[in-house]
Length: 362
Image (cartoon, rainbow, N blue to C red):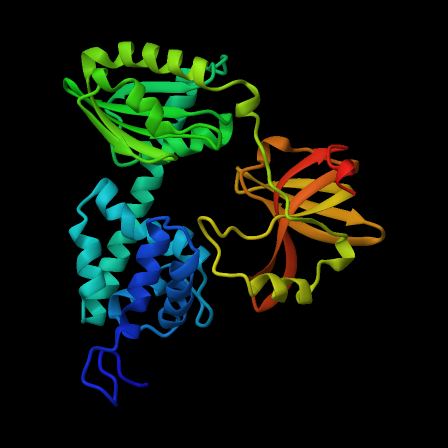
């Protein structure tokens, strides 16, 4: 069907033409990619590959997305952050204008503007995260983290809360104070329902809402310390230190020689990946870390060897591990194709490494 909104055979709207927007909205809003959602996103990604919307074409160009296959990961880490940045640090109408624009020149200008807004969001987020870490000062955080500050931007505190959960593996509440009112974002961990935690403190809050993993709240400035004390008391009674132990779920143990294009093709049949349908996480046992190199300040490039085979990998956010070298490592990873300057190389996207910790899996 060459029609965008109309089918040749019937007068009804051709809803397939809207699936590019459906895919972006579903992935950006972190909707579970199971059942009908997975079907809609799967077909939506194909529509996004050849979208006729000037706004989406401009947005794809602005992130240098190559022609061809578009993945849910492209939406999650390249397209959606730019769309969301407008509402976080500027005006959400900019993103709306981009999506409905029918003029290529206007769309290109709006996409460039969203790129600038996203860069601004990234800087604000980085500055806020640094301030939060400075406030913690490397001291013992207890079973939860509750931080508040004047001047924090309410549009980024949810992201900062998620970053702290990733780093410290415990529930986090971040509150941005403006005058006499605090706006907060809360993020939970696997073992704890963050919304129940806020419900336990409801008398101290103006309002709150959310779900098991994430929630928001409004609180009077003069009640923040009382909230922190009550929230920490509830956490102490609701979860144990064992509940806070970081956990990585592995799907299969493989050998490095099994990691090839055929395996990657088999994994690809399970896509699109996202919430509730994560990419399979594989594991090497008794591997050798030949060496590591810090790249981009926060990331770590690996060279991994096992039984005469070797492969390069990248660990996003793992720079603090450097340097690492030696035998007997368990390596949790997902394989991927790295495309650079016309080349295509099979590499490992490394989630974590542990020495002598996964031999029992074999």
